Image 1 (cartoon, one colour):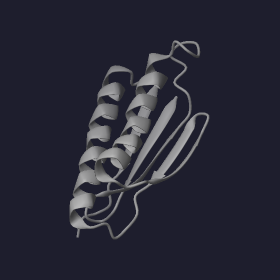
Image 2 (cartoon, helix red, strand yellow):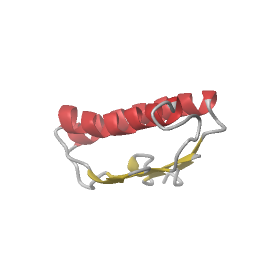
Image 3 (cartoon, one colour):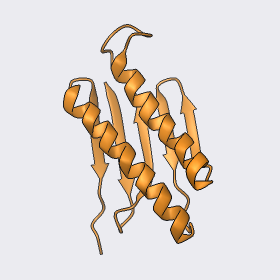
Length: 113
């Protein structure tokens, strides 16, 4: 199973996310769930770099991706990054709705002040 964890700051903005595991939906190379999750998450990291001009701190290895958003971004960059990350969450939730036996999401929303 793929496990996705979204971690948020007190204001609700995403501060980091992690993805680990394998869907086991099909054999490697034919696993549409793994391919979809990988395309969405890695594509989001690439989109942040291309569209917001920000290189996110990340660690990636087989079956694992961890990404952190730095503190103190200027408001325009921060808004772009958050929009792209929230879009990623919606796309992953769509995959989870269709393939819930193979992906589980946890959104760790901190209490808003």
